[in-house]
Amino acid sequence: MSSFLKQKDRFTALHLDMSETMTRINEIEIEKDDTKETNDVHVHESDSEPSEEEELPDELSIENINVSFEVTEVHTHLPQYSDECMDPIHVQDAKMQKSKPARGKGYTAGSSFITNIVINNTEAKIHLDSGAFCTCVGKNYLDKIYTNWQDKIMPIEGIKFSSASQNMHPLGIFEAAMIFPHPAGSIRLKVEFVVMNNCTSQHFILGNDYLNIYGIDINNHKDRYFTIGENKRQKFAFPLEKREITVIKQVKNFNKEKFVSNQLIEAQISPELMIEMKEELIEILFQYKEAFASDYEPL
Image (cartoon, rainbow, N blue to C red; front, side, top):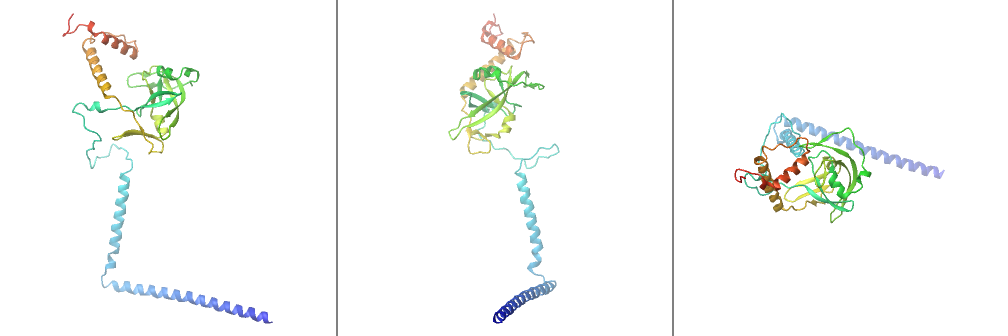
């Protein structure tokens, strides 16, 4: 009987507790309703007397304008696609990263993107050529690196290759791994070279295909370098070129062109000769140019 009374008292206390809790909730709801009524009255009174709170919608609209302006600014930093109907706006003069060459000598500021690699345990050169459609190599240059490359070549059919001046004759596809050396850690790339029979370049050519596949970015700022993949901190610098040799070649080529346009202007070269053969023939004739008569040096 005593245990029953104890349980009854406990139930009564719990009931009182719940009643107080419900009372508190009811009191909160009552306060909330009063606040709402007070707010309604305040708004009603503000209709007759203007206050600073009426300017709130204008402030909100100004904030919306600012947000839209910021979004527009962000979009201008994204890559923009060219459009025939697009009118040029806000035209600005580009800032030169290097000193401007003399007038008429802009071509002397050009530099190649040829760098050093290690392939088949042999040091070689490769040209990072974003204008080349595919990665390729000449047969004669590949002979210097791989003596048995013909045993590992894969066939290629149904596609034509051409350069700016002639049609290229592919022999097949040769797969190889090359290493770009770097003091912080070298990087190896596995690529497929299209072997060209009539390519005279004395280096490998890494075309636009594998530049995209491996994400190779070329930087043309004051320091010329390239990066591979997502690691933009590891920079591969291009070797410094010997400008004196470049100038000598330019003078020699200019003299050769002058020789061809003057002494060989009436010469008839067989059209059946390949371009490489024509160049070799002209080179031999240029070496013995003293044997030809001219207005300044008659026989």
